[in-house]
Length: 358
Ligand SMILES: *Cc1c(COP(=O)(O)O)cnc(C)c1O
Image 1 (tube, protein in one colour):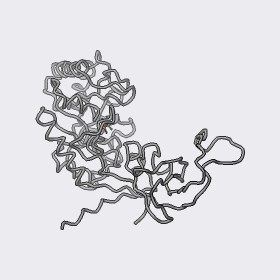
Image 2 (tube, rainbow, N blue to C red):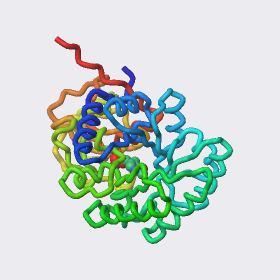
Image 3 (cartoon, helix red, strand yellow):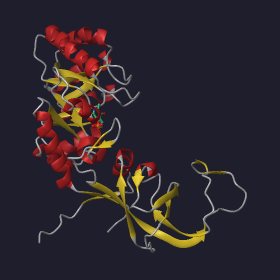
Image 4 (tube, protein in one colour):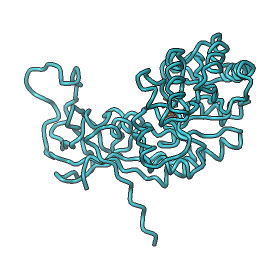
């Protein structure tokens, strides 16, 4: 089989999604299934919907369009604020988009009127992580703008945490979002369809028994795909953490000295490490590098060590493993390695074979 490749076990992803939908549902929170880490893969989208996600989210317009072309009809939210020049495409493919800028919302309204649709706005609110969102004091004004723009309707309020500054959800900022939902509703005169508290980094908060207030939606990617909450990267013990693996082929396997020799400068990716002298050691190269994945986000099989990586080569100390040229190595992936591999043109994606039943 072609390498490098991402092997995706969609049955495990489905189990994760279903478990999260169930546990969050018991707290009054629904799940928007986020497909961006898998390049808007339609099979993933269908898996999430079958597991009970009440809609889909993706940050890239091209992914949203790809989902539509594949026949996915569920509600899709564009998770990154549209670029003004994309307004016409956005209103044609996405039902809802995250927004924080009047100029963009005006362009969306014009485009929506031309297309004969009403486009939903998920108004993003800044709660302290300092990425996207209007400041809390501006929520009322922004809600009024949306109400007054004929091509738009206020679908809901959203917040994003733990992406820029590492500020996580807590009782205070979540209560503020609940309060602001009331402010926006008083202005628009309609009940908001969605109050979206954040992404997978909200899981600990949402499942921890806190009062969830008006928050009734989370936009989940990493938690579903990798079974971890991103705030502390803790595995969630009732979820699969191995639904995805990255497989690469060994292209050199030799015994070499463990210390380099010659005059030392920097490597292609910065200063070289300082290896310790362990005498002659087996050393293997797999055909995998920064162009394929984030090497820092790979976890090699037990006993193997990643010694370094450049654009195209990943060097391993195989430990007790017998690595021969042509053999394959399976790496577990963290979020950064998964996203980069899924979006690299050099990495293929295959559905892991379902184990034959006995
Ligand atoms: C990517 C993204 C999400 C999903 O984040 P996860 O941590 O993968 O759950 C949610 N909201 C926005 C705005 C995003 O860009």
